[in-house]
Length: 435
Image (cartoon, rainbow, N blue to C red):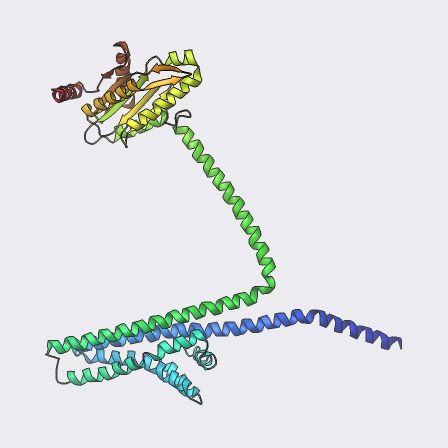
């Protein structure tokens, strides 16, 4: 009695386990079956894609070699035309055999082999056609395939017509030759249209089957995949945020290294680097260099405070930016000193720009707490036409000119060129212009 009860309990436990795991087993089996079925369909679709490529290429080759034969009369080219034409004709026979009732599998197999399809792919080609020809994508592909039958027949007949004409020698009538060649081109274009549609439909069907296969096989692991995607996305976003912050910090540091924090203009370091680059690349014309020092700037700082002085510097920086040419560089060199680099600028042009800056500053009025201050500047200009001029030399000449402008009473432009003859020419040009 005890042994019978134990056996019965074990049996019920076993059945309970089977009951618990059977749904999972069924899902796994179903997934395996669907996966195997889908892979078989995919393999057959790929075989059709490969076959379509061979079918399309052979049709084009047939037209090509027939056209060569038409113009040359070379029998070897006609033989190549026949060899190429046999491929789509074999595929056509295979399709006809599969559309019969009952289906002639053996004829279809022979036709596909004549169509130069891989022997291992032929069973899949037959299977897919027989059982899935009503599926939308395959039905449309077969329709495009069948649409080439009349053209294929015409090409076959056309070849025989051309051969019969060439048996009596080359075609002498130019219009006749042009007519035959044009018709071959038309046939080739028609073949291409249907071949492209056939290929497109097969590609869309292949992608649809692939998507279905992917959906079916990942359904049980969807949660894990979503978690993995979420976690990966979070890591990617964190890394991207870090990289963006690092990039922004690098840009900020790079900007700070080359710009004045108050006015936003280039600083002395960037100014000297640009000046050295321009000196190294003087090719034609000359280079203008302007140093500008505000007059009586200390009075604004002393009477209104450094905040007012900072505001004045910012407004002067904006004015200089507005007056510069697009490719000129304006920089704050320190304190109330500014510099301008004028590439490809003649001596007279550099002097004109400096004078325009002087007048703009003279007309500018700075207001702070209802107090108005006149703003003027002492401006030194140097004109460089010699590639051998050093940065230190150029700055020394400009600085000397600026110093002499201050000595002569401020609010003026003073020129000190590294080449005195350049200044003389510029002065004469300005006098001639005034006259």
